Length: 457
Image (cartoon, rainbow, N blue to C red; front, top):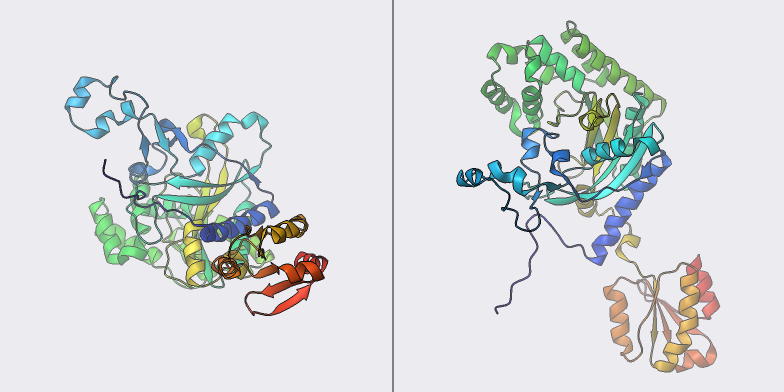
């Protein structure tokens, strides 16, 4: 039998030990900020029932859901007439009752409904797990990637929106980013824009097109809107709104004038203004907060605030986003439970930190000390020191006896281990061990107790 060349599916990746240390640095930093703001961690299954996911992300989102074939003879129960049509969509629901989760928000809504009697509301949760999308792989876009989500349900206070802005500011600042923009919009403002051109029923068409302004420009958006049934007159009426300029305060003033005839549009302006006032009381350390009317995120479930975060230090798409959803749990039978949530794009953040060389040196190493020895006697002598260092939470390895010292030191260099301890006959006799700083090459003679004391610091 011919050997098969090993590979992974397109859009997925292996992660090396070095990469995992860096990824965990990102996850741990974000989790620490979530916890500081009162969020608790949950996990949900990799697979959900297809009925849980389908219809929740709009037409474009549904196409990107990975379906899981039923186990056993999955064609056995399919109506032969459907098979004869030779259309995979016709039989999809019969042969696939499960799907890989597309995001963490809809499974979270399902979780809240199933566990509503044991949850304390408002319920603040965070979740760090992989999701899957049948997207075309490209730089910064993968078919399997991790999301870091935080949501609060059971509270309509706009303080939650303001706190999410603070969470983005603190977490990304802690990761070393120095220039990033948190964009905010409100779906009610977009609804108001649709109302003033009598196209309230076409709000999704309008937002999907506006959302692409960055990518395809005003001409591209105009063409897409015309293709979706909007007139030149409609576009002329909303163009000044789409191309808003000035400070956040000036933009809000212009919007209030343009949306004077739309009650819901003005309510959206009020909500944005309230969030801005909260943030003024807790000034941002690093981020720039910007009202961006083109931010429309084509997802069906946002009803209020919409967020997106972009770094200005590297060419990358959004590294975070989210928004307010008034009745996400309603689709699972629990009506009237409002929520708001955000997500960090961990994979994109990783690429940005790598490009900007922002990972700390410690993120390149897991072992701090390697104990080297010449023979079995040295190995035995090293064991108490090995345990003393580990008890002080110093990551330590003992190289097995029998290898040449050069090979052991090469091992330390290849793994970026910053310190080595060499134990030979002289060291065992005198009790003074050779302690080496691998970066500077400086060597010292220290007792085991001195080494433990120094590393514990």
